Image 1 (cartoon, rainbow, N blue to C red):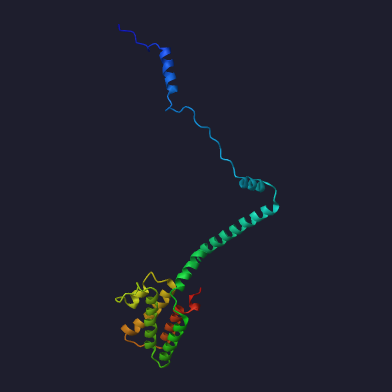
Image 2 (image 1 turned 180 degrees about the horizontal axis):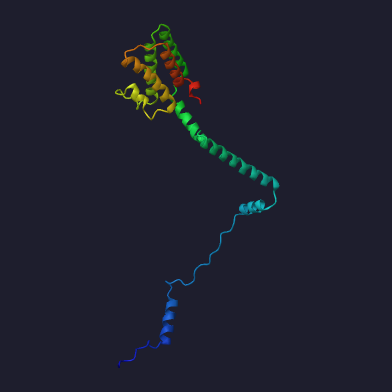
Length: 211
């Protein structure tokens, strides 16, 4: 089998290469020398702080360990509350603040309770419970007017998730007793009134909001 021998690379023209290289170096649009990186100079105050921290300062070291220990104790306390079911302390405070905004003013609430007590003293337990229910609805409406619509029943209001747990549970107990007297057509008795009164105290007064 015959054929032409393979063609090798053309001979390098050293003069042409040198001229092309000279022209490349002479082209000012091409940058060959990159600027040298100069690290920024540390501020004097930072150098002083570093020197101070690197020295032997037993009081400073003690303060640092005290801070670390305090942070560790706070974390252990928060984790312990969470594991015990009490919840994170900051969330509890936020929830208590939200609940507090639902509580009626104490003086008007006590006047209302006195009026209801007067009805109950006459044996008009159902009327006394109705009075507490209607005023409780007014209190909720005064604080969250967008929640209580005219079509909502007391049971609907008691189920509103936007109402905090404390006032919602107390209101639900009052509503259940009033509904029993209305729909079962059975007047409330003294024991019913005591339950209703206790529920309103939880709804209206500070002692019922603790725990």
